Length: 73
Image: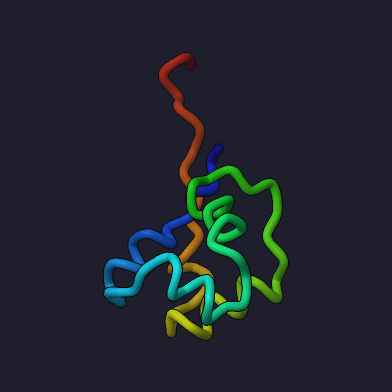
């Protein structure tokens, strides 16, 4: 998928565990793992806002676009 979720990067920068982030955001660690591992089809803006609030970052720090592999062109 061309959208990459960098929650891991922000967790490492903040020296925070997945469990602590999930607790502070108000979601289960299992539900946080879905976008963290790139399996989410959608993310609610409220969840994205809560992640940004807890991590002290902007949405662009958590999400980035990478073009599809162009090797077949």
